[in-house]
Structures are given as structure tokens and as C-alpha cells.
Length: 72
Image (tube, rainbow, N blue to C red; front, top):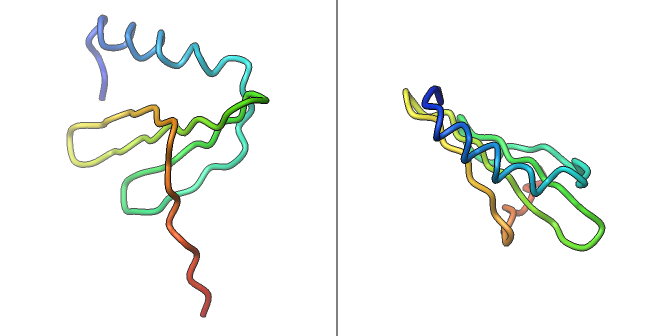
């Protein structure tokens, strides 16, 4: 869990770029991670949150290749 003030401040500053964006989709491709797809009218932005073990990570991605769906 993020508890350090400066880490939280940096995460907050980075996420401010998504203020005028809309969440298009939320999905998971692997265990302990979730992806948020945002669209601001011009470009897609993806936020990846991973909750592995004790260390959680958060990434903003501008290019993302989603895994293909498997149909059975």
C-alpha cells in the first residue's frame, strides 16, 4: 500500500492528466492486476494496477496491446 507522502503526491499529479477522460472499460488479463481504459476524445490511456504480494504498482500506459479473447 502506498503511504509515503511524496509517492502519493506524484501518483496524484500523474493521474490529474485523466481528469477530463471517461472510463471506457475495466478488465483483467492476469492474476492480481486490473486495467482501466480511459478516453479523452483524442487518445486512449491505460492505467494498470497490480496488487502483487506486499508491493502494489500503478502504471500509466499510452500504448497497450490487449490480449486476444479466446472463445470456446
